[in-house]
Image (tube, rainbow, N blue to C red; front, side, top):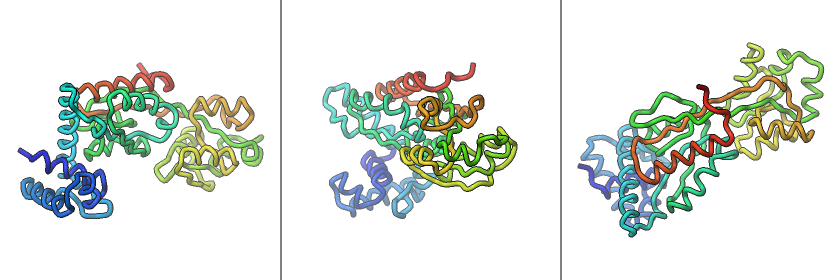
Length: 297
């Protein structure tokens, strides 16, 4: 049986990124934090925390981190049922991709946070990598491209984000006007969201069967990415609604009116039924249904 205080301390160290910050959050001394973590490691006979900056859980620590967070959620649920909980401290870490945050995810979780008094902690990463945070025990749920359930998790299909290629008029005139797309796309400068963003290269390979050889600019901020496209830094992929709206208003040019790239998304979450987690799943699925392309049948 693992001590609840020690598990909560492990969670605090990982969430806050260090022993001193965890001590401040728990209102104890850094020495007490260190003693609790060492006692937990002796019991587990494993190193659970890498003493780096920030501190991170080891693979073995991730399993206990998940247990710690599940206990915290369950305790909050019980206390709320007694009407005696200060639920503002209930921590709800969730992994989600940037486009979902920008276009629909907040409409699902903001009302949930207000209704249940939970403390949201959004981990924003590329949708191909968010499932890894579930495996690490870092989050209770994730919007991901993976349909294969992480151990201990359930999966719900959300639909697909539809992307379309767009560019500012000067980029279109310089690289695309009057040219075969198979020649233009691989050579034209593009804007990637970051090193993990492969949407542009996936679209080009699907269309031309060729790799992208043109300059690749990186702008890893949602607003900044869209602004870079509008400013003419290069072409990129916008979600369907904003792409068509910008093209209709003459602010951008749709580089291919027929072709698009659909990225299926799934909601993976702990197999733990509580009022808050069940409400989170239903809220996420309902919000996704209003904007994503319906899941394939």
